[in-house]
Length: 200
Image 1: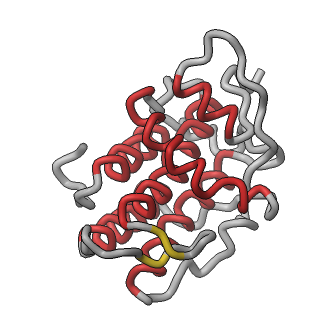
Image 2 (image 1 turned 60 degrees about the vertical axis):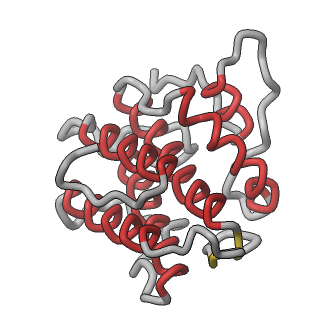
């Protein structure tokens, strides 16, 4: 993690934030309109959605305003520097999670069931960042920032939250596991993504 970033104190979330940073840093100047594993969404739209969700999780924790755009209907038009836009959202998310009492019974979240244990809530926030980091990296031909070590805890929280979200169209139907799948591939298939997806 960069020395200039804010740590949330939650390992899975911090690693997920770093994965998103790496993916966004790998986007070339002409890469923002490229297609992604999210059908119909460009790199810009996936990026805007990921940023909006970080703001949404922070808002749920703090009671402050959420994103000023709909993360589920992003414009696909960047009106500010991507790095600054991303870092502001990640800092806000990290700061909100850093203030959470780890011994609390539950914390509010913007996704069903809208209340989760602190660990699960922070990991759910991380799930969104890490998986969209993978989407962006695959779109631009960059190395995957989603590691097996990160995929294991993300799968744990995915199984807590994904099924209700499928009904909203937030995740596609799970794909059948295949022989040789590692932890990253298993997570991606559970979320309805083909781990072998390429832009070609």
